[in-house]
Each structure stands twice: as structure tokens, then as C-alpha cells.
Length: 102
Length: 400
Image (tube, rainbow over all chains, first blue to last red; front, side, top):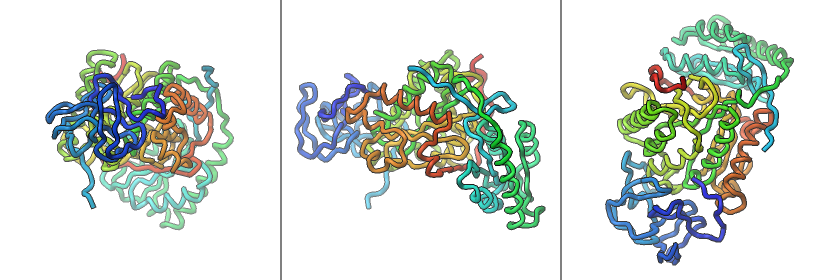
């Protein structure tokens, strides 16, 4: 779901105005402070390119919205800027399989 | 944009091929080694190995091999059987002969064992290569071109760059009268309502939603979504999120119909290939890896496959060339030899989505005219075929 005017200097991209997550356009580091459309975000851990952070405070049970599509449900409260992934989101359809941590 | 003229090899059924491949086909695993020894002596020619490992008969596998042996990119077929397996070798041989292609069947038991069969097979393939080399390419319309798309080794960049770029290429192809097939109903879970809104008819919209519901139920029984651990490492959190990216491959065109493996779309337009078996869950996962799906797209008549990857897949395929569109700029820098298009340039602001989409489309046409893809040059000719079961297409699936 592309966006044709991405600039390399930008750190985050919200694919649609309705989204409550933003995409990292470059690697983000823990503690990094960013401003996204006037919302102050604090990144809680290293985030790789293409991964997601919360664009606003997300309460537990809320629907995660990316490109104006529901992509799962929050399993915990997520603060603005915090990493959004399998540790705090579950599928509304089928469980996500990840390898056990070595 | 000015479109180049295409050319292809004319076949008796009216279709045209963009390659002139000799397929060597094993009809049971017991014949695999002999078939491979035959094919590998022609590794610098378009001699490709395909086959089915099972000894028990399966209507799907029979249909798949018939569609593949009579694919427009195939010029001749050598069938290698052991002699006691359950595959209907006579039926397959008759079907290939009826398509006007040279076909030879060798039974290892009848021929006198491994060495004699390999020798006989090599002699036949050598003669066929000389024979089909005299065929000339003829003008081919863009409306005769069939392109399939798949994503594999996806990460969070796939849905941002390569998949929408391939969607742009698909829109250009459909606009020019060509046929585009997207796939994997298990990776459209969560997108069913959006997809149904693009259906040519309300009945097709209902059928599209039913396809996805079937996939969700099938995967739920198996306990896994179509989701690899590498997808999560790449930043995809749920099957819905993976679907959102996968769905972008389909572009914006109206959806003209649904096909199943081996069914060729009746005319140009955008089609969904339903790859999830019908009926109760049996024979395991719908597709055990990307090549199982690629083989099904090719069995539907796809001349070329557009393959997007973020993590970095390296596979190609027997019979039809595979174009690799790399979504992730870091992956591209690491694995550039395997990649045809650097779509990660969109993320880094070096190119725009429409530009990369046009590049993918232009490359598709160049490959159709004979240019080798990276995976072809590296001799990637992967193939896999397993047991499955399908029922006939529903009445609303194909355009009237």
C-alpha cells in the first residue's frame, strides 16, 4: 500500500489518517523522541525499518488500524511511540506463530 | 508509455509460449532420479524437471501435470515412469500428444533399468531440442499474455513497496487487455470485504468472501495461518497485516473472476486463484511452500511470475520465468544478484511507486520477449507438486 512521496529524511509514516500505528522509515533507537503530526512519541526499544510504533495511546482490546484496515487487537495498553508487534497485539482470525526464543 | 511488440511460439490450441521448454516429467518418486539425470545433462538448455512423487492416484496431480505438459511455454515432454505406480501415464501421454506436442513415455522397468532409461531419455531430449530449435517466434498480442503474482519471504516492507508496485504493473497489464492472476486466499484473510467490493458481479463478491472463509476455516483446523516466523521477524504482526500487504499485489482493477489450479482464465482481466482445497481438511497444508503456488499459477497458463520478497527469496521455477521484485532496500543490497527490481528505492525516496510499477511492467514485457530473469540465469528451476483435492468452480466464478 504505497505512498509515492516518501522522503528519506522522515522517520515515520502514517499510511492513512485513521491509523493508530506508524511505520518506521529508518531504524529507530530506544529512547528516541519523535513528533508525529503534533503527537509526542517516545520509542521504547530499537525498531527496524518497516516495523510499527503506536501513533497515539492505544488501550487494551482496541483495534490496531494500519492503512485504514483492522490488522489485530491490542492485548495490553500501548503508549505513544512504543513498539507494536506480537508481544502486544493478537490476530482477530488466526494465532501468529513465532519461533521459540533460543 | 509505448508498448513493445511481443512475440511467442504458436501452439496448436491457439495460445503462444514465451519459452520453448522440454519438460522431463517423473510420474512417481521412484522415477525421480532417472528423470533428473536426463534433465541435468542439458542444464544449459531449457530442459526442466517436473513431476509428482506420490504412488497413489490423485485427480488434482493428474490435472496439474497435464496442464503443465501442455503449457504454452512447453515445446515437448518426456514422461518417465517406473512402471508400477498409480499415475495414469497413458492418459497423460494421450493428452500431451493431442495437444500437438512431441511426447515420449519411458518406463524404467520396460526399458531395462536406470542406465538404459537415462540413455534413451537423453537421446530423445537431444533430438527434441534440435527439432524445436527450428520453430520461429511469431507476433503475439499483449492480450495473449498471462501473468501471475506471488509474494514470498514477506516482511513489513513487502506491502509498502514491491506489492503495490506489482499492483501498478497488473493494472497496466489489465488495461492493455492482458490477464493477471493473484493468489493465496489464505493470505487474503481480513481483506474479504474490500475484495468483494471490487467484484464484477454481486454473486462473484459473495464467492470471493466464501473463498476466504474457506481458507480461514482450513488454516484454523491446521492450527497455523499462512505465516512463517520470518514474517514476524520482518515486522508483520498478524495474518491480517500480512494479508493487507499481499492484497496490494492485486492492484486496483475490477476482479473479473475466480479460478482454481489448472483452470485458465477465459479472457483478459484480473482473476483470483483459489489455492485452498475444497471439502474436509486432508493431505495437509494447502501449499507447503511458495513453489507449490507458483506451479499452480503456471498450470493456470501464467507465462511469467512476478514474485515480491522482503526477506529475500531466491527461488525461480520450471516452465515459466520468475521476476524478483525486492521490497526491502537492505535485502536488495545484500542479495542484488538474485533480484530483478529494487522496489525498496521507494522507501528511500530514490524512486516513486508509479515509476517502479512501470519498471516492473516493462521488465515483464522484456522477459516475455526472451530476456532472462536473474533466477533463470542462476538456473533456479524449482518445482513441487503434492496431493490436493478440488471441486468444480461455482457458477458465479467466471465471467459470462
